[in-house]
Amino acid sequence: MTAKSSPPAARAAVREIGRHTVIRLVGYYLFAGGLLLLVSAMLPENPPPGIAPSTPMPSTMGGMLDWFRGEVALFPDGAPRWVDALFQMVGAVVLVLPLAFTYVRTRTRVKFDHSLVQTVIMLPVVVTAILVVVRDSLALAFSLAGIVAAVRFRNNLRESGDAVYIFGAIGIGFASGIHALSVAAVLSIVFVVVELALWKFNFSADFERTFARLCLPSGADLAGLPGSNEPPHPEPAAAPATDGKTTRLRIYVDRPEAARPLIETVLARDAKRWSFEAEEQAPDHGAPVLAYRVRPKKSVGLENLRGNLLREGAPHVVAADDTPRL
Amino acid sequence: MSTALPLATPMLDPPVAPRDHAAGPAGARVTLVEYADFECPSCGAAHDVIQAARRAFGDNLRLVFRHFPLRDSHPHALDAARAAEAAAEQGQFWPMHDRLFQRQHALEPEDLGRYARKLDLDMVRWSRVKALPSTEERVLADLAGGRRSGVRGTPTLFINGARYDGLVERGPLLNALARAALAPREPGPGR
Image (tube, rainbow over the protein chains, first blue to last red):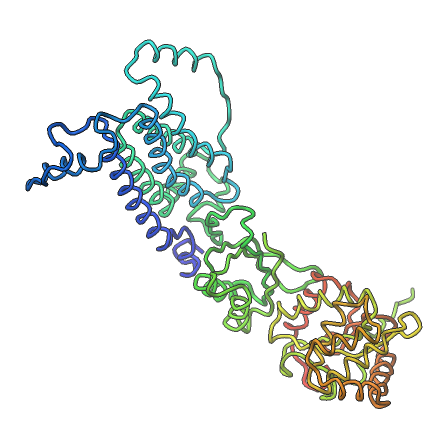
């Protein structure tokens, strides 16, 4: 069975970003953007000249903006350095959070690195602080280079793609540190959009078989690669290993090939996240068992989901046993 | 060369009848009959396993409970069984059954009365039915049926009429139930 002929439900559930995720991200960016704009108006790096507070509002757009900045500016003569640094750091954190979210969303249980999430969030804060300290001082920049050269960090990342998140976080921190929050915002948005798109469409996976054919010796076993005749095993959507809401369902069936489409249609509808784990054979020639990791939708609940599996999976599904919450 | 004769699997006798306490549809793919004693710790452990099986199988499983009080080793077992039967007379057998298994360590008469009150039973009626000789006869009839079916200890389970000799643990029991559910169905009431 090729990936194209796999059941529609199974395909739909693989790498589904989800409407709610998109809405949340867009809402977050709108809120964060508005907040940062407001705060940047209140803490202008260079206060607008010539607009005294409490003067009448000009009629031109540029004049209106300058008037607004003059009205809301907390420090008309320029914010103290520490306030400025605090704002840039908070801005960096606000803009890097979507990167951390994207990392969690797109990584599987095996590839997920808990410490990297914290690193991605903290790194721009530190980078911003360094740049605030260094500013335009060449001497400080050389000192920093010397310090960095003296300290060695060696750590293997679980996946080469994780390095991109590190660089993304550094980029946001850098932009924030030089008062270019707008650039940081653009970097954050472009990063998240491209990363989610690459993950969703599993870019380049379709060429894996071609590469294998070119690079491996002739006659090499290509089973399991995309495009082979092996049944597809969808990569699980990112779910932390212990989120407390995910259940392992062991579903007893008569014929797995007949039961899977029925089961996965129900899961695609009633589960927030699910992934196929394995097909097991019960001992003593028992019934085949299909194991899934399932996080039921809140509105459905585990018991209703199980009932739907039994009802809509009949006659192929006879039981769905849940192990304690993972 | 001698050939070992296969031992016949003991079958349920009498078969499931309307007088039995049954939970689940009569047309379920599997009927699980449990002979148990409310004071038996192994039955308490099996209760959790069977509840898991009921959840897993849904309407594919019918559970039938029969009393098998081991009066020699469990002095409160018969009284608890009578309390359950008296609750059944008011349509509350399964809630009382669950409560008794959950509180196996407290089966004194005052405890049983407290459980009955918790279930909002008519206490006068419950006490009267519990004391009736016919209630005890009903329990002892189950016990006699169990002995005829080859029950030697508790809990003993019958899956579609055949005695289950495997471990009363979640995995093995669910496997056995699933195998029975997928086996070709034989007509007849004796399952």
